[in-house]
Length: 493
Image (cartoon, rainbow, N blue to C red; front, side, top):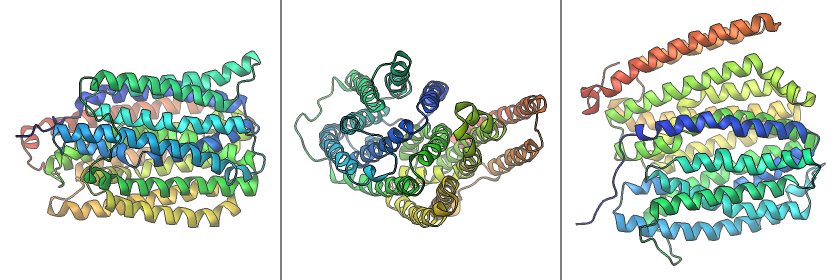
């Protein structure tokens, strides 16, 4: 009888790592913001513009196998999993090298046609060489999730990359050296790859993986193809606004837009830090259907992550303008765009997690349909709004596309849930209470013109939010641990 891969049904093993991941993210954020301030004026915008294309090609080179290997782990036997793991590594190594070549081609075409771009041929080679390092490291980190290992990803992504990349760039400027941002980018990704390989060998060194190039199993590739298509469309859409904005307004406008998007993505990272853990749980507990236990975990995840993002939105409303002005005066105009992007991120958390649930239940094609609709809306709105409103138009188009995609994911998942139902009223009522608190605080902040009233008001509202969050968390955790819940019974709202 074939040995099945061990299944990790409980996600609590990874929660301390998720907490550590979020607590360590400010280290990278501070270094990024320092670089954005020091290199403002064209160099920072040029690098971040080219870097975004490198990340697109890195995502495409994974072929969706990074998420597929987590899904496949609990659905096949040990020998087949090991063969597919080794074959996937070889395949991704080849596709990522092709991704580097594609970047060099783009550098001479679409990327190079933006007004004011400041990148040399050596810069382009450094960025292109980083793509295989990014792809291999990310896939190895995902494979380690199946062995209950997350610390290496945190060390690599939150410390090795920022220290060597952004720290190296700051050191170069302060010491008057000639290191350029793309060279520091290559060094950071090389350090991250070393951490990833070491951690992978530590957890998989005793296993007999495929040592010769081969093709992963059809089921694994079939799962990854819709995700690859989604990554392609989302990547093209996400860069479409950059190219359009750069050609219309130049690299300085791209610089402001990119900073707003960087700060917005830092807030989105709160949700994304849970994705690998939740995908692993959703893939195994559900067994291709939405069970009562999985429904309960889904609602609790949406409540917990959504209200964390709500507090982040409150911070942006109160202090976003002061923070952008502190970085550089030219960034001040991006405040309203940042508020809009953060609000869409908060409002769409249920839609985002619905998409993740569809992936966990093996419905990646259904999720791809929602992605496709969102991309179409994004492109149409970008072509309409960027010529009218510039940076704000691009942010608004992205937010609207998020909502369209999220609503469709919720509709598809609700149909899949059937009579079991998707949402629980107790969680929705609690989330609505948090939303009313945030709305009232945001409106009140408009009239708080002096720091003498803004600071105590923020701490008062934050204390109320923390008390409500702690109370709700304790109450809902009791539901999660109740014997009737764990046995699969539906806890009535």
